[in-house]
Amino acid sequence: PKEVEVLKRLDHHVFPRIVDVLDEGKEQYLVMDYVEGISLKNWIMYHSVSEKQIIEWGKELASALLYLHRMQPAIYYMDCKPDNIILTKDMEIRMIDLGSAYIKEEKSRQTISGTTFYAPIEQRRLLWDQIGPWCDVYALGMTLHTLFVRKEKVGRNKKGYLQIRKLCPRISRRIAALLDKMTRIDS
Image (spheres, rainbow, N blue to C red):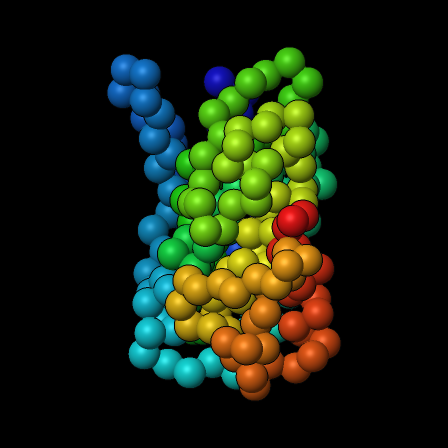
């Protein structure tokens, strides 16, 4: 299928190389280079992480997502979360599990999936015409929120903004405001 051919063209250091695709009846499986390391979800359970380090990871993840969004046709990752980000022994990050990737095409209706906590409402409600790069921006914001708070917990005010400074007082106002913009929901 065309989607698999698009994914096989990925050439960004954050993504493992796709080496094969297995067809098992109605299911397809991507075979990717093995990435040795620990998920960021597990890493934050045992290690404290500075704001500076989280910002660096955020920049790298944003760069990888922008790379996907600029491809022709555009790709939306659709499942950015600490479980899908591996920290290698060299302290580099890799994004794995492209199984939820959405290839933007005019005439194609693909399955929309992802993880509820990290997915914006458009994605959770399967609103195909409202899927776009902002879905990945939201998920990245929720991922960074989780790295700061160290768990999947959110407090929102009546205007739909995260109240991350209540859960993580050490975060700078500037970064808290950025995460608010990335993850705001309409109330």
